[in-house]
Length: 511
Image 1 (tube, rainbow, N blue to C red):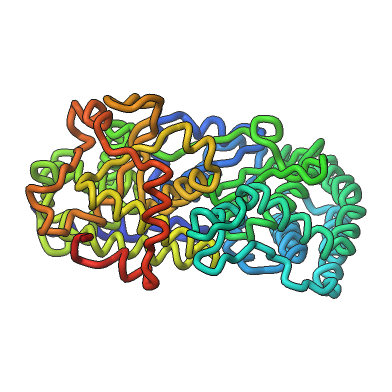
Image 2 (tube, one colour):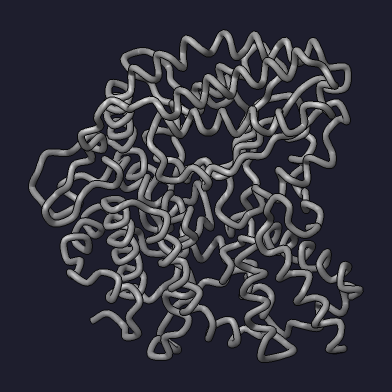
């Protein structure tokens, strides 16, 4: 392989691994599910997908495809991470109107009235931002249990190994937190609510003045960085601001780390899926392994095109099952796939199955670090315990796949939410739905643990039943996979060691 071509390929991929506003030109969004047309429509949308699936790329790339009379304003919620409510909402609104102010002449013309409108709005928001908050006396009331704690209000005392009564489920915990915040911050929120009709009137007047713009898309990226208890209130205000004026929101976030809607004493707060916005799922999971491989392959081909390499040049970089194994190691997530590809290509010209196996452990450890960075104290403890339970179960059964019954997921909201959060962090991967088991009644969902949990363990050689998703009979083999039942889950949970992280990343097999 020509080294010059490889250098160009590395450079193109490295520059585009993280898409950001003002960054270098990125590749086109690879649209296998025709979502680009939807995102460019004058409609509210929520874009769901795991980290690295291309949510930000989709937002930025859609800017080039919208109607010329539509303008986009991009806001990243990571800029407002850890900000208190409702100041975080005020800051988001001010950032919105600041962007309008920057583009005022181009979008709305050189009109004195439009300048006065925007100046008045930002002046009011500035006064609200510096206004003193009512005292917050520890708003977050998530219960802490001596030996564990709840998953955002969801994991109950029984799972934590304590004989306490079952706590409220995850959504009830979120409801309790949001109600408390609402009471603590009611003064400032009341002022914001009084301001809303005036804001809408002034936004409507903007569009009456303009002859070159018919609507604005508010692109709100990474909503999950805001406190979960604040999210529905932020979304609620944005939704009300957009209603009956030519504003449309495009929210990109992790589905299971986000609360876009709650019911507070019979009063809906937020935006409700399919009623107030249309969901767009851009995640390619390992359950559709062939399609996910196709997506990652087309993305790599596109980078190859930018580096003046054809598809055969790209194919020559892999041998045997190297490509399929790399897709598995990335959990189907393009950014993980590309990042691992670059790391593997540093020391070799051809990537094989064993090369991915050797790298898998460090990749798994990075995902643990991502989880620790993003999750909050009590939630983090529960997530780490969940990883320990699932990893120990699979290694004891000496298999990379496990099943959970649909019935258990329906009855145990805490377990369901734990599973979904671990999916978000690519610690486990969804590989099958609505499966029947060969010896157990009911229907099941199938999951695989990340290959970083086991692929590096030489001690498991020839004694580990790895079901490869690339095999034609993979679905049939799943029907014989071990079932993680409640009693087994609870038993492992109670045996969690004190140094949970050390137990998760250890080298040796469980006893």
